[in-house]
Amino acid sequence: MGDFQIGPYFFPAHLNVRIYADFNENQLPILLEDVPLRERETLIFQHDEAPAHYSRRVREFLDERFPDSWIGRGGPIVWPARSPDLNVLDYFVWGYIKAAVEHIRDGTRNEVRDEIIAAFRTITPDMAHRATRQIARRVELCLQVQGRHFEQLLQ
Image 1 (cartoon, rainbow, N blue to C red):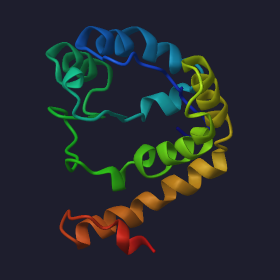
Image 2: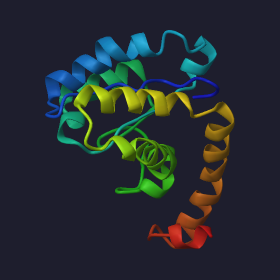
Image 3: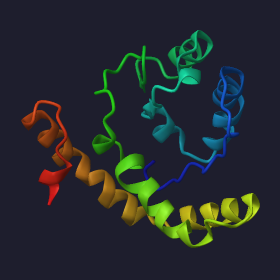
Image 4: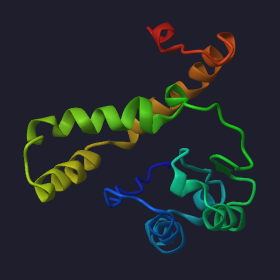
């Protein structure tokens, strides 16, 4: 977000409503503490359609904390379903991190976790800016193909 990297944050293997709601209510504010208020005021929160994300408790919290500024099932901002081509985390970050930690695939949980944290630290503000600048072009292509897959048109 801007020149600030938020996270990574590690969820347990089995995410449920209680854990996800606790993250939003208690951990997310801590992660956002170093982000300037001006940036936080313009933040749009986005999550996917995991069942834990759709609970009434989570939606009510997001409506209060991010009024009219969150994306997810039941949220105020409409977003195309299954749209990884429009999400920087999906089309850049996860692939970058996966490639960076592939060499330690058989490592212990702590070794993999440490490598993931180290890989996140190598993402520079310039890399993030370049990735986010692609969004406008991606949205244009999405509209052009009426919401169908368009990644093949990016070449």
